[in-house]
Image 1 (cartoon, rainbow, N blue to C red):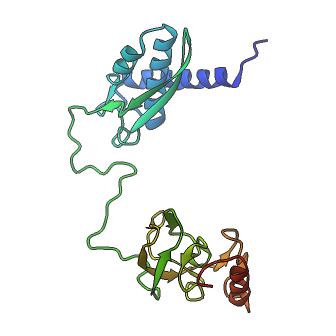
Image 2 (cartoon, rainbow, N blue to C red; image 1 turned 60 degrees about the horizontal axis):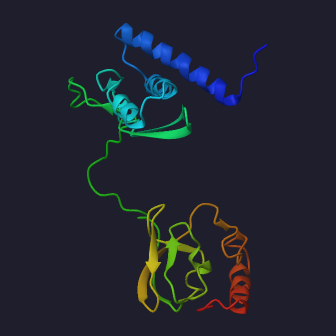
Image 3 (cartoon, rainbow, N blue to C red; image 1 turned 90 degrees about the vertical axis):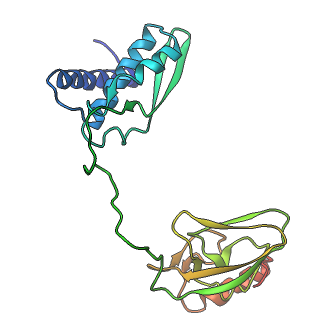
Length: 232
């Protein structure tokens, strides 16, 4: 009986997928994303086992496939590939950037998998939500970054602003964006209401429940004042 480690099992899966890719290439079939990844990975790992120089393997890997060898869009789906290789001196990670090079066939005007086709005109975030503008001053000695998902009422206690007005509000920025407050600087910030179920947990721990519950704002303001939140 042969006992294989999880790493060895993964290696066998990669090899089998690479063999399928080789068969498809020999038949003129363009490779899918998993096939292309498996083919490049297997070739690189085999070269490492042969103890070829790192730079030589990296250069070789960039010449294995072009966009002519893969289905439309597959090259764009593999902007980088990290492969853990076993060399004679130990394990190293091989980083390949854009391993599927450009081919000769033109695909202009062809829609590729995962492509985003934007409509015309501008898209306004939170267009239907009421907005307020408040002045915020950072009284601390370092920058404070506030992300778009944060309940603004609960942001850093060194930020001075009308916290009651900011109850149930967030920064009017797209998801993942935010705003930075430098020490001693006052900024005008546009806020919009938090949507959905309007339930906030965690953060500064001033709410931990529905924003619209009876007396929720009064209790949160009381806690904020006790804990030294400016503007409460």
